[in-house]
Image (tube, rainbow, N blue to C red; front, top):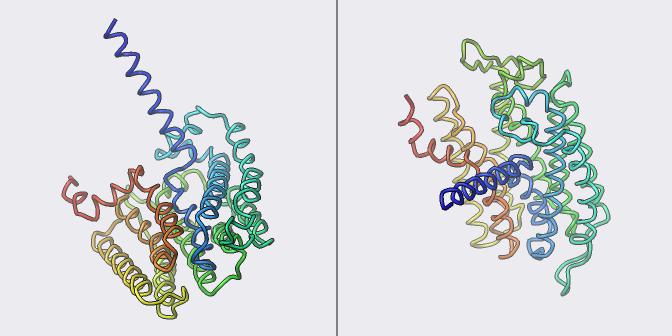
Length: 365
């Protein structure tokens, strides 16, 4: 009886763990940090002291938006994902969740985001510590949803994939602008800088990072991506990156290095004293680490998953380093938690750490 009871408990534990991982993959929790930081960065660019209650509301809206964007994307790309080895554990690909159910959940997140905005974000926070959100905030949110829906539907079939990459990039930038409008304050030069950074980031991440990662399967299935259109291919198991794609990636990377540096030089965050010093040191350190990562990849002649994730984390960290030092304690804590917490359960984070510490290279056959 004891053995039987232990076996039941083990099966129950295994089923619970599988359920947790299914939810993790289904809602793409690994990518939530990139979504959650955007409205907080937007809010911080306009009001460095926005209250914690509003930060919580923005995170709730971001969660609804994130669920819509990724669930809708997974439904639209399901046939492609079924042939992608990296996606085989996903419940939608395995058939554990039916596509109509996933689509219904994605669409239900749209009114949920509106309700969460009206309930948690739009009203003036109690205690006189903030203004009501600007009436244009829902328009920014609606724009973000519409642009992501367009990208999800046409992103892999558009003859000019750089155009749909731009549509997606503008959608994520609209989410950042939603956070700014939610404070009820006017947009600043920092808001514009952050939005421009987000556009360049998505163009690089989607058109180069993600497109090269999925290149072989995408090309075999007739998908259209920026990397494929610019000539990237796999020959005899080796990735070939043509000069046009390399130039495109380097131009985007140069912009992603230049914008935060200009933000520090021009003090677009209007920071003073220790906050400005901390922002400068943080941005400079991340920029140097980014350059070191690119040099290491160039010397190796290829980019592993760990190197790619290290590069991505650095790109996502730069705007946080620029904004966070000038925020009040509570909104700064919310921004840092939104940025860092989703990285903890992500296995790719530890692949990046192994690569950065050299363990990945030492363990290679």
